[in-house]
Image (tube, rainbow, N blue to C red):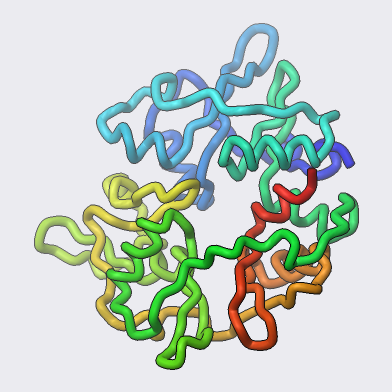
Length: 282
């Protein structure tokens, strides 16, 4: 399967144009919920692809306004490359979105696009969940205060924690999305009363801290002090070691999740992440 068959085509890709400013990017990141936006420039010969600008650039350079300075070069792939090549590029470069470029921007391919292709059987992956799972699992206690759990995710550099009860058994899973949805943006002594997920103020984005390729609230953000059990997802999707990887991919797409605990009986023994599926393709 080629990238062209899995990517989002150019006509459906939101871009920002040079010359542009920080505000142009913020508009799309806030309104569309994107993590990054391709940058193009109009010329007499047509549109030229120039790079990518992401939340991370906005966070790390809060005083920079010019789009040309904020954007960066990222790995690209061509439409006629295989999905396996694109998956390897994403895994090796630690990015979840890769522009498809052949002189001009032709589209975008994401980790989710590759997982969907696996789920549909459009890319062969003849392995089991047990063969590709990560054995090191990030966990937290169900009664841990949420601000502490947020720090645990930050220091572990992962976007999730499997939640354990008093007996050490799985009780749920907490993701950074769960935290962002209940975090409150504050400015000075005033609490706006609005969650990070719903805020539109530019300064709010400076309170989002990059964690790998994901984002966790830190500065100017107040996180509820209630225990993790209040915010975790209790309906756990799990997979046994023998589950074919294609069925794991199907579960990820159906449930809209990026990681699934691996179990033997009811015992937690690992976790399968979407990037594990990408790594296994080669």
